[in-house]
Amino acid sequence: MIEQFITSIEAMNQISKFKSVLSTKGGYVTLSNTSGKDFVLGLESFIQIFQDIRENISEFSPIQNYVEREWRDSGSEYFNDSAANTMSTVQTKPLFTTLSKINSIANNVVSSYNDNNFIISEEYIDKTIQYLKDLLDLYSPSESQSIPLNSNYDLIESDNNLRRIIFKSFIYCLRVFKEEILMQGYTFKQSRIEDRSYTGIMLPKYFGNENLIGVFDELQSADTLQSSNTPRFMYENFKILDNDFSYFTNQWTETVVRGRKLNLVNYNEYLSAVSSGNLKIIKEEGIFKLIKITTGKFYNKNVIFFGAPGTGKSHEVKEILKGVSPEDFQRITFHPEYDYTSFVGGYKPVTVFNETKQENEIQYNFQPEIFTNMYIKAWQETSKQFYLIIEEINRGNCAEIFGDIFQLLDRNPEYSITPSGNLQKHLEKTLGNGHDGFKNGKMTMPENLTILATMNTSDQSLFPMDSAFKRRWDWEYVSILNPVNEDDSSSKSFGFIVMINENEGFRWIDFMQQVNKHIATPYIGMDKCLGNYFIKPDTANRIQIRSFVHKVIFYLWNDVFKDEENEIFDKEITYHSFFPVETNGIREIRKILELLNVTVNNYSHNGQEQGQKETEVEQIDEQQD
Image (tube, rainbow, N blue to C red; front, side, top):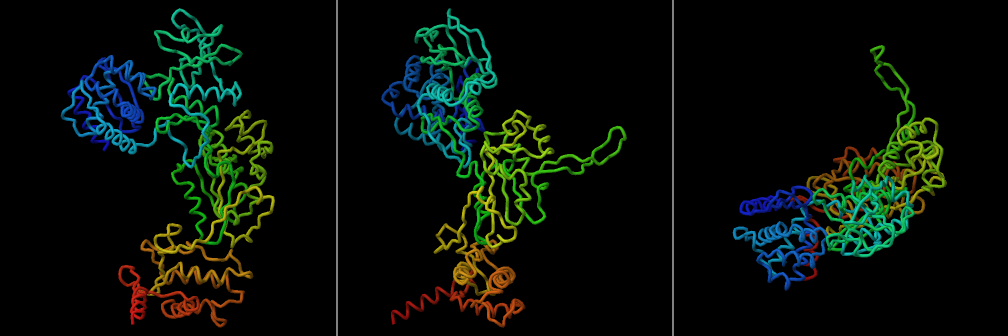
């Protein structure tokens, strides 16, 4: 669709005095005037323009043939998109021709295009709006509108005017944040509006040498804040840097126009820096919204996913990380040999080339490990969310592994800790002693570093966790699921088939549910139950009988029922009784299936269940008899 649009618009450019080009990335259209100057509007802006035309079609229908004054006045009055509104005033014809080209492509009338005509009807405009929406869906969300993955947000302010929402957001920040944060890096510039002088306040890091605020000696009026009949500042004074007569610029565009720095993209970067990534202006259905981002359910938390073996705890974590860049998360597995040095860091031998001796030599340097690296990364990029994943957390000695950083899990800035000397030196080198992540020689957990862990409850005795450690985590139980049919999306395990031989098999879900009834008793407990994904099938959802014996039967015999009274295994039987699997194993499994009342079906034809269907037919015939 993108290629077709580009080809069509190039064809119309050949007979047009004005060029229009769609970007292959980002979803922007570049407009050129006859002097060769370029201007940029996003596809979102064009959707808004056509929606404005549709809502005011009685005003636009009479001006399908281009008349500059009429199109300039209509665009100025009816276009709600601030950049389009400005464009209709200063670059009326390039905007008109681009709208006409888009309209022609959407309605498949490219061959009849000319620079002075724009076909306007409800049918045409509706089709164009839908076409642009479909086109926009092919692009990633624009920077000015995207919201971080796994995010929720609270609405603070909204407005259909870009200038007003930016002004409202600045006043909001002035109330919420310290002035030194809001105005960090400001400079002054002596400026003029016609014959009137004022002092401009600039933030060069975000807006170059353009004035963000104008400071005057006295109260201003709407007339004194404009030049050439164009308002330069918002008509509402406020106090900043001890200046009572300060006015906020209204020279904003939604996208980059002619290299202007006062645009929404740059302003959102400024908002992100001021608010540590929590504030952003987005646009939804033509309305600009100042939002406070709450970065997902597990933001600023330590969470342990626990449950019986095979319930899909790692899958739960995988779903949370879906779409997260690999650079923004790290995964480790705890085990009995894992320690503080492996997790946080420590002195280790490193081979270094000695320039003087012209030979390699061994030196001992502090080597940061996964926790320290993620800690530093999160503090260096506070606008992003980072994840540290710990698989099988209870298979390691948590008290030893976390060591002196244990109290960081409180996530309370008042409980900052003093790390070991070696770690202190590394943090001072990488972050600096004045950094929030290492202030006055102390560490504080960054809010944007989430720790997610998994724990198999059947193994919790391997390294018991003390209560002080446990209470510093949120706990999410991952339960065993019982899907009722193939359409039940709660779990894919309904379709898993354990094949006894080439033709016969039984449903894994049937076996799992029935055997769990024998496990979930007071003297054994739910911790030992089989989860939906305790055993994994092949790509055809088949589980081979040898795999079933080696994994499921062995677990039931060795870890669940070995020392317990049970009905599953005969008293005389041993695990060795299941071998050879093809003879003895199948015989013993059939006994267990009969005990559990699990049906064996015929799956000989492309996995289709035959036995059960034949039984159902026989039952129907019997009823009819």
